[in-house]
Length: 289
Length: 306
Image (cartoon, rainbow over all chains, first blue to last red; front, top):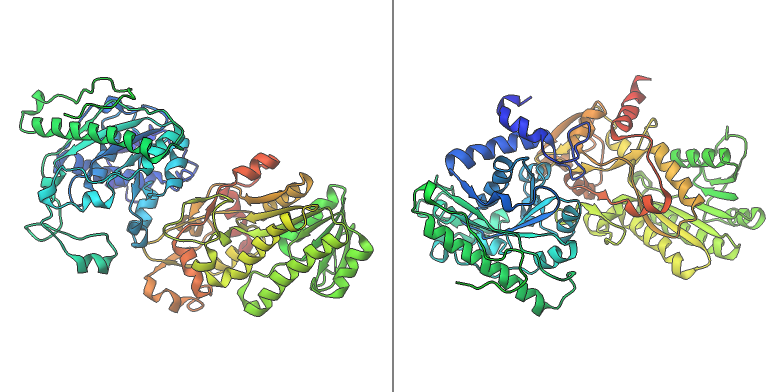
């Protein structure tokens, strides 16, 4: 059933995912091959046609084993997450599946809850993050959380406070951090106002209202820039000062990638360059431009 | 060893008893219900675990080990009865173990005590708190019994106590919590939710209990078999039809239209998963399940065709 909704390319790529599917096409986290097929077909339409995303530097993503993608939340709905997931599926060879860390309220919503569970988008709990990384999965974290998507248009591309959990987990599981920047989401869905009552009624952390009222992202071309992985020394039990210092380095890197991306946005596609960090595997502080 | 099994006439308890006899152990059984054609090698006492005749079994038979399976989990028993048997019963049994020098005790509990909640981790470890008290208040007696049994580890340190938190069991008998939920041909699911269900074959669960005894486990262990499957797949695999019901109407259809009855609190357990991490048990015992998820569902589906 529903096979017509799945493109042959997606079917072929799903076969090459490194997920331990059982006879029913389920992995131990409840990720279902059939659901993935429909999910990726739909994402592909948005990735290639609606938003027309171009990804730079996908070679920085580990081709096997654990990895933590850390980036900016761009736009008032987490479409950036969906596009990152699509880029690892469509632009990596072999493709990899990305597990997002979703806001908890999604699990309260019918259908959303069931779908997110079947495509491996689990609630953002430290237990999930550690377990997935120890299982060698790719984890996508937006350390800004709902604070990040809840930005108004006037604050676009300004990073808000980062949570510190991701860094302790990366250290504890020895997973490389791949900082990335998503450019274009802020223009796709610019929120000029947050409707508090609607947010309260739906249980969502905020309800974005764009100038055209309906919170649907517009088809704006977007770019994704991945940067070389960063690794830090430690086991996750360091004091907050140390952790904050590490996080500042990641934040500075993402700020630099965002500036790089914004500067290149108006260039023709073939003149755009990937982001090159000097000394990717370094522990020394990044020089913020 | 001489093993005393309480609640021995239960489906899983019988399997445990038969396995122990086959393994050369001496088995004594206590139950309020009779077991008329109990197999050879099982010495049966019909008694209530909370009453004096049960203590007399300890006094006269002097078992080396106890496997406590006399817990009431069905809700038709009523809250008071459940509290008396599950809590008072567990209490007196551990006291008897202490008093009559029983060296080892295995408490067979449920994984449902972890409780299903939208913000709980998918895989629960033994260190995770039992959310069941808040998500499913009717389970409070099972939560308390589980924690109380584990307290024997420090109250009576001379007894090797193990608490097993076993996932749902299913198999060729229609008597288990999950079997009851899947009793009808149509199973009511909550529309828009499809949680993972963690279950194992009752024979595997019995085998795991025997292993816990033979390996002299000490501590709290999650016991599971094959990986979990979504509820809709569980329905399909057992030949049921999943009927999605919008949540506001859900409690109205339970017990009607051929759907199984569930207490109100159970709704969270039909919306969200309870899945356990059994790595500690596997490491301690080397347990390997014989039946995968497909075989378990097939076994259950076959009951009606027989």
